[in-house]
Image (cartoon, rainbow, N blue to C red; front, side, top):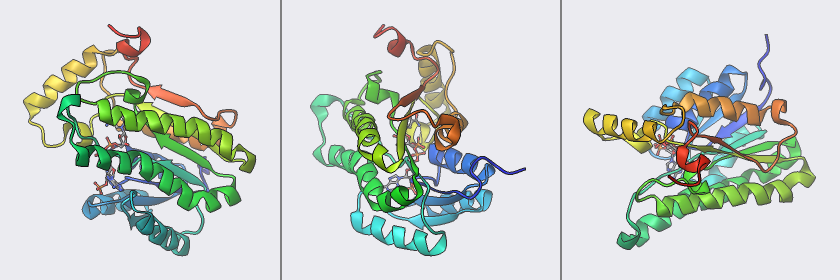
Length: 255
Ligand code: NAP
């Protein structure tokens, strides 16, 4: 039986762990060849390579030079890219009045500029292949609030607008651009370095904010990314799929 992504090459940025890893695993299950980008954690990337049969490529997505070198490596090992998932992201939590210039700029550089730079680098591939772009935003980018996430939320709001505008700009090349806005999902980003008591508190807090009384799992995002990567979503462009357990503050405009 052939998978839904048989014959496709997919680049997933930040695929060494968390949501990127779940997306890479889902795509590989469906027959895609996956290019697993990572920045610092080669060991984790190698594990994903083992599970998916893909290839690993190091690049900091905020560096155009590193992205260019990565594109050359991908082209020589795998060929051109059909599906690009702009997933790499970081967050630094801080109250607005404790603004840290270096951290905020780094978040902008990785989360927002990284997605722009990666898209620019692989645009020739995507034009040739009439490919698809999936951007990983966040429900923070549509206004759901968690304490100290103002600056992170701004980077993700940028991703949502980038998605809508690119859907316009790139439709003439047959390229579709959509986004996923996850809610709170347990990954290194959200629970890394925390004690089990702290994790439980976070889980209770975020569960109570959802209508479904759930916390998220990376697989939910992998499933949605698969939908956006295939013909199953061929009539969708410039859209944001929110996967957040039905956040009460989103549905009610604030409680
Ligand atoms: P994670 O577990 O911390 O994984 C982040 C991934 O991004 C890692 O593979 C990391 O690679 C990579 N990365 C970090 N900086 C990079 C850079 N400069 N260049 C290239 N890759 C870089 O985080 P996650 O939770 O899976 O988050 C993935 C995406 O989902 C992010 O955009 C995040 O903002 C978004 N998101 C997450 C949640 C959530 O609740 N988890 C909710 C909404 C949105 P290395 O480890 O190798 O450096």
